[in-house]
Amino acid sequence: MPSEVFSKHTFNKVITLIRKGVDAKVKYADKECSGLAIILNPTNASWYISTRDMNVQIAPFNAFSHDDLDKLRKFVTRARQEKKEGKDIEALVATFAKSGSVDDALTVHDVEHNGALRWEPARDLYLEWLLLNRNKNTHRSYKSALGAVGLASDFEPVAGKPLAAITTTDLVRVRENVTRRGREGNAKGSGIRQANLTVSAIKAAFTWFINKPDVFALKSNPASDLRKSMDRDPKTKTLSNDRALTQMEIGAFIYGLEEISNTAVRSSLMLQLLAGQRRFTPVSAKVADFTKHPHYRYTWSFEDKSHAWRCLPCTDDMALLVKTSIRLAEGQDDSDYLFPKQRPKRTGDDMSGHINERTISRCIEEMRKPGGILGDIDFVVATHDLRKSFITHMGPRMGEFYIGNRQLEPDDVEMITHKNEGRDRVSSLRYDKNTYLDVKLEILEAWAKFCYEGYTMYVLQLQELQKDQAQKKAA
Image 1 (cartoon, one colour):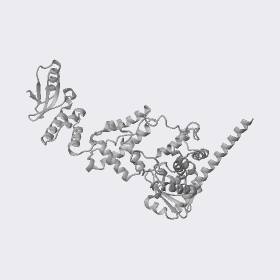
Image 2 (cartoon, rainbow, N blue to C red; image 1 turned 60 degrees about the vertical axis):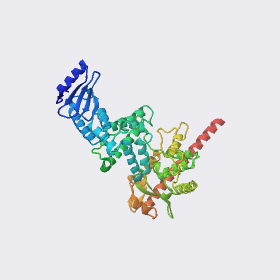
Image 3 (cartoon, rainbow, N blue to C red; image 1 turned 180 degrees about the vertical axis):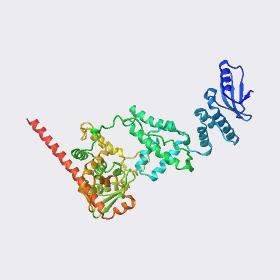
Image 4 (tube, one colour; image 1 turned 120 degrees about the horizontal axis):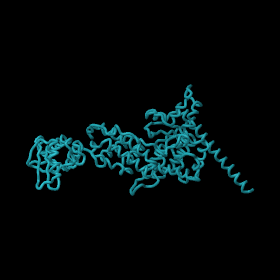
């Protein structure tokens, strides 16, 4: 058996023998690394770990070049050490042959023998933590964005992969899988928004992983250089159509709600409109979030999607919606939610959740179909446009309101939509009569008046249209 320090000369010699062919087995052993060998047969040539105790094929000879000698020697030395400790090295060898990376191979080996985590169980641990420590809407959207449901096929580049072996390139491929489905028409819209949410979720997950060194032992964060999609969404609204609903269009929306037979859907959308909030805020509201108040009818305290705690007073119309919804909810197995789940998602579902937000959105999707109440509007109306309309119309009117002697400014509209008042502050506001709640009530009452004036305008317009049509028919 020839033995020499492997070099470029060795490679050239083996390549020549492969080209000519050999009649019997030829073995070359590396003097610099005990166990590293090249074995030629009449049909093939391969890298081996070859010692008195084992003879394990690593990979075909052409899988590595002269430049890979250092990592081959490093790998063989470590593989022999692991074998000496009585560990199975099958996964170690298979991963090195596939990736050419000693670190990847050792990471997989750790998974097999030392309990290191792969992507799926690590992701699920993060989602469990998210459910306990963040808003439920965040957990719901991240669960989908991280491939636990819905997008599982997009995560094929990291499926089953040890966490420490995941690279930025793997994560980029996940992002591109989502956008590719969008381009092919198999994702909502063009897939850009889904891809960007997935990027945000991945970055948040890996930030959590790297801050748990005793659990995940990550030495670097592969998501740190991950960026959102560089493609522009071809379905993005143009600036000319990127606007809020007009007063008349808001009135049309209220008119359209009257045609909805589902009381919970109708009430949730109306409460969202009158409160100027996101869709999920009323959808996920619990009965306990509403406290009866001698001056404000009810106060509503909640944590929104951005984890901001706020307290709102209820106008007469909001209070009536809340009171009616609480009464209806009490008839549904004493649900904790203002708008309880309406149908089981699976066999054995205990029906303990809230109404599905997609049920709410489908209502507006029906309204904007051709011939629908919102069908002629020059942009795609969605639930978030209700909140945008509140900000657009009430922001410029903030100067009509005062807190003490201070005249409010346009940005103060955020006391309704964004401001984080903190848990302690919310706790006191929900029971006390307070200057801040007074001005919030004034703002919400002014907004309700604006909305109902739009409703009146729309009804009058319909009556005029019907009158004109009747006259034309009579003529």
